[in-house]
Image 1 (spheres, rainbow, N blue to C red):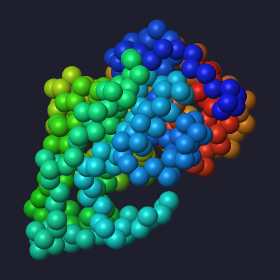
Image 2 (cartoon, helix red, strand yellow):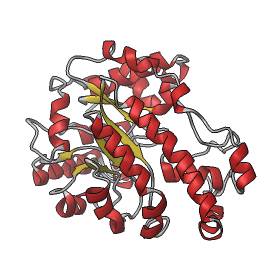
Image 3 (cartoon, helix red, strand yellow):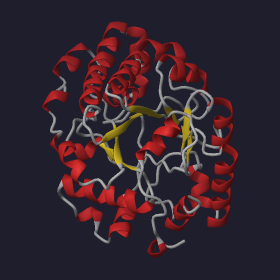
Image 4 (spheres, rainbow, N blue to C red):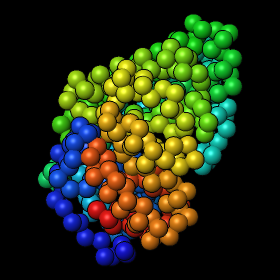
Length: 344
């Protein structure tokens, strides 16, 4: 399948993705993707995405690309909404950085002097304009401005946070509360807008073999705020998708029962293949995406198409939407990505 052969097969209908979130069988297969890259958007729209300077134009091109590729929604990351960020200003912008890079909070004084953002003062005006950009039947999903644990690690550094948890429990709690309360307000505000159908809580909790911190530590500092975020999303009648990388099987009951997420995203074959995750968890939480990134990059289009077809056959699309295990960055060959979605 080539880009210039791309034709949408189905009329957009966000209700089909809702059926997936409700662990029902949609009327036809459904696609799900966390985010895609600007080069792919440029191929789809015929306009250089990297040359766009206005957020509204970027959002418009993202929506057009998701529409043409066959999605029932478009993912709009928070950075396109002029919202806040907790990343230190000197944080390195590289594909891979140390979890200890750029930390700025290490004691009470640095905590008190940090320029904490105010979710109330962010510019959400573009969300009022998106309805006019969306084709009939489409909604948007919003990915948050980082995740609670991720943002705290950005601010403190991973190793320093490990020591802080044991040496200064009060300051540790203050930092998590400062970040968590602001993220909560972000989700309260954005989930209230009409064009928003679902929100992605993006927060990596695991390494390859285990969680970043003990389940008990996550339950003390991270999960209470995540539970409030999911409640806020549900209170506005929207759906909450967890995007979390790493080995987090030890806290899957927390994800499903305590925090009450509607769907789980991000899977790796060397941690837990999506087929296994679906078999174990799909009766209690929707499974979305899952075609392993390494598989998506290294395998042939025929192999990718075959796995995607088998996934749809095995799941019957009940509580399942097809997509990558993480996202579509620039290093994913376009022909491989198109092979994956061509089975829809």
